[in-house]
Image 1 (cartoon, rainbow over the protein chains, first blue to last red):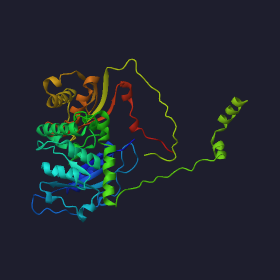
Image 2 (spheres, each protein chain N blue to C red):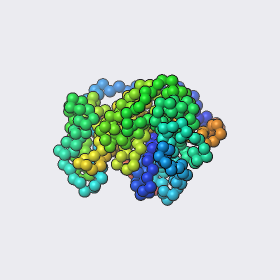
Image 3 (tube, rainbow over the protein chains, first blue to last red):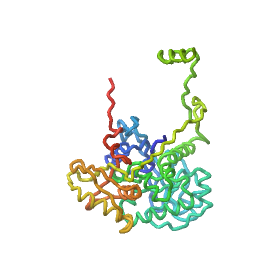
Image 4 (cartoon, rainbow over the protein chains, first blue to last red):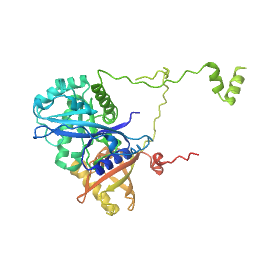
Length: 269
Length: 131
């Protein structure tokens, strides 16, 4: 079974709060979280800094509930782009595990789907989608392995935002048919996080099937994480795992408990 | 992705069909409030859930029966019973509930099952005794 991930925890300078959000995420059963640094280049004097080292946050990472393994923390950069000049892949982007773009216009959405070297494309949830999702860029993004993101925290905070979230999510799922979609929190406080199964159920409201809803918080997030790693390295990644030595026949015989062996013999005779 | 040491054997399936499916689903929930000293009664909790349902689905959409079977006012945990048809609605309303009397809150759904007996224990809270 794939593990659950929440790839959007909003970065705050308040270290204590950030720590408690990550602790809550571990308690709810998320195995991986990503701290999200948002850069809006339209405002002046915005710079893409280096992310804070995640090791600074904790001495020992909190244990994920039901997994007995510590939680994994990634860094993620979100570029709010309202002009094509805003997205310039440079060395600063390489310091982040994941790169996301939040396109404000249709032209940029098209460019983000077809050409930008990103992992995630954010979908507006705090305002009415200013453009229509066309099939060709969305299909292009799916082919390139880029994922669309919907975050649910605004929907918890305010009922108007909730309407926008659900409306935009439905119009996206109509176009992408539930494929290549991730649902993330975007939480700033521990009480804004929800459990993974709650979110899988919430996916039904967004027009996803039960299967796609669960994939949106597990397997699709894993694909995003791996896509982020390919961007960091040259072209691809290779996963290796340890292979057990096949047992020789003698060993196999020894492995069978004495009681079973006796039974086999009686059957044979 | 396939691991090399797993042999290709035809998987065996056993199909289980419940003849008398339960008409209800049961949920064990707990409410987390920002201010830990806030107390609320069972009636207030139900009121909160009903108002959350009405916010999300409106008068008609929220008009389905559900019950609060048990409520522990000290730990703020309870057991809900709902018809299968209302489960998704009730669950999503609980998920999107974010405030109680201008105070942040959050519902944690610990267990969901069609059998009430399942809620008597939680395997995730078992502690193994290792010697």
